[in-house]
Length: 72
Image: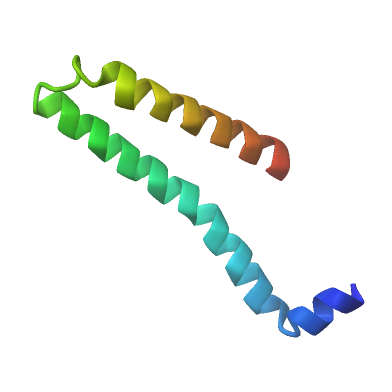
């Protein structure tokens, strides 16, 4: 606790930083969904499904599981 007070004397700043780190995955997931929609509308979804969409979904799933177990 003492080290935490020395690093972040203002706990509002600490809370703001933690909340910012929680918004990063939400933004990146939204960006991924926009990319998938772009692929779907440009008719490239079938050709890039295995190289872009499946690894992206796997990454988002693992990321969601980590955040779920970390925040529960």
